[in-house]
Length: 191
Image: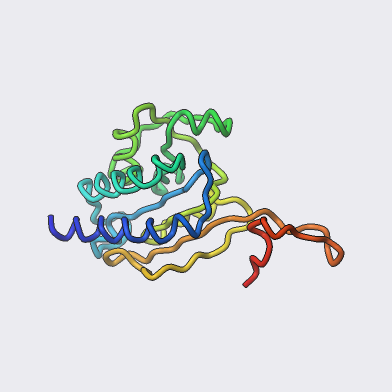
């Protein structure tokens, strides 16, 4: 149990460092992918932990919800990486609900925990999230907006799982004569 708490504390620290850098606004989406197997030192999908999934769901909810950020919890490949989220988020972004209930062996421990923990959960097929958190190389990129920008923080892994973070920015268009505002995330984004 002590190890679980250490993993949860590492996730809390990662989010505390990442969320200000992601520059998410209330009502925006943070896609989260997590392999509890990888965190625990196993091959992805081969040693899941429901307890860790519940703990990570709690940490993410506790940090995102007070900021008005919608977390979208990515399921595993067995559910085609569908996402669990609040119905209010799905309705706001006019996302199409699909019919499935994630469980640890088909969906993943964190997605299953989110489905049970969210007051009015839905599962949707895809999103275009504003930022992403990937614990264990679960490939959340398919759910990010088109221009993803890597974000580096002091942590590069949680437990044995590789940690990847990204924010998104609007596309730069217009060519050599275009002017990009200084208040935009796009300004100076190619550093």
